[in-house]
Image 1 (cartoon, rainbow, N blue to C red):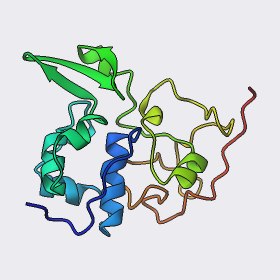
Image 2: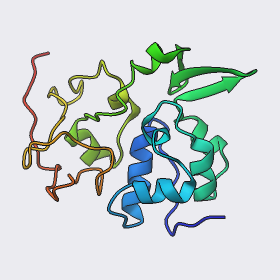
Image 3: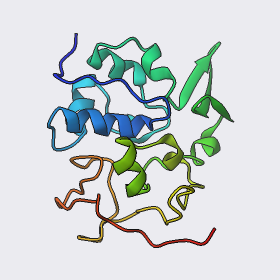
Length: 173
């Protein structure tokens, strides 16, 4: 049963947590915690590579296959492993550490242009934007706090500041 008014589909390369944030913002919630609660996603699950996309798909009224492409966890024959955009990362806790799931960072220009957060930004190794040649945004220039997954919108900080006009420091090629 769909409980939300707006139920967009994920973009093929969208971050799964970015998708949750985009759905939350589209439905007017102040934080993704509300939609995660409606989906039955508990604390801990909301920040882990094992995020249950099945529950979120059900909330949206989507077939779970619609979200499996952006999921980080896969289970085959009872074996759990991790992936990003269908590229295998392997199994075990250490693999999940290759993903930046608790402290988001991204290129604000990419998000403003694309309208979503690409899964590339969930890789811990993604420290600069290959397109705009700038450092990733890790904290709000207004309040100086770390960017949170549980903020009002893709380009809105919890303090209310717009992140869309943030210009990150340029990096050399």
